[in-house]
Length: 541
Image (tube, rainbow, N blue to C red):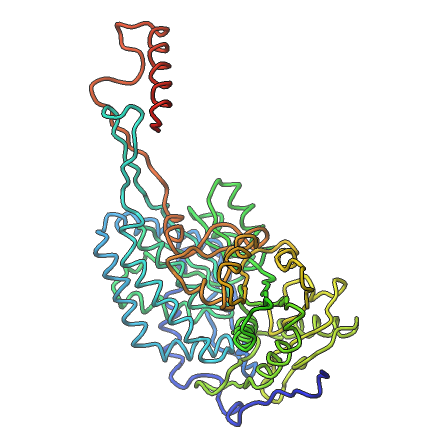
């Protein structure tokens, strides 16, 4: 199938939207920027230049946000630390009350943050709404389950009946959250909520492209009742402000590239500070011979092109059984070709913009390199300046080989490659190629066989008959990567326990452990050995 057979059109309203939402006035922005932590008494010298992002829809400037210096970060962490001590003593019921109030305000004011997310990222409105829905689910889940996840636990002591032991969870202190631009609400706030509910303070490093979304949310949390100093926001260069934050906090939660994640982990390790890292992915999808081809093609389009492919769990590699390859290919091309590109502040578009000229250049480079080396573009494959300066068509490639950059490197854009596999072949071996291990997908009518394959895939999450959302949206289950895709988990029990340390409290009754004053060490060892043998025979732990 030649590329010219399928063209992607923009909806009539695609270029109708103005970039800046009308309600975002300079006065409103100034109120949000008041939440940027600055030390007005800090050392002399000029302050860093304000940060001004560029709106992807039309490349116009968004709004200037104050930039921080390392001294500002130190000041923010110190203020957060003082507030944390009082917050840790606050009842779990009060913390829950604040987060649930935020949940309600978020849903009521969602049209505002949808506008902001679109303005700063260029994504389609439905994809912005998915962030609202996910943050609401996280807020509700942890507000209801935090007490359960963090409850003290009684465990068996050294000498049953004489040794009573409790394991309790205590907050880390000040948590640093470094979030990226691609999901500024979900990743910028979703990791903050469990940290707060666990009794911590938070200092967030907002990405310069999407700082306004984080600041809007910080103001909303204040309205919900969160103490002013408990959640601090710092802004500016990642190499300056992010580095200073890693050097100052008690735990780091980072989402971003694998290269930067390694640097964050190394820096935190020097201070013996823990870190949770969700990093890159080159995520595979398997279509088995027995799959529902229409459903698999529809699910692949969603998993590959949501947020214009700018999400860590999006699918970039699709392995299709040869018996259904052609039918799947044709259906995926048909669905992809029907997707609507646009930049309006409503739900009329399916696919939004890429976020920056650098992202557009990276996507174009991968596709051009593949085509130059013999790959075929089945649909898409070109920029769309007629829609907006950073739009790129959702693209399906065929004939990709290992010498092409798109084969193994993360594209992080709306590009997916098809690979047929033969009957009797092992699709799991193909899915496990490379060093990433974040998300995967299997499509099959045979649930038992799909689960068997899922057990063999090296990935933090495997979706069966869904592209990515089933696992990512299940906030009671952990989400994270293996290999070069990171360390630790968000969501579920680990998503809140990682923000705490375990403390063991053991109380001994009658007398201390060890030989009694009336017995020799040799006699004590002899009796204890006999007891250990007896416990083994009785099957006791």
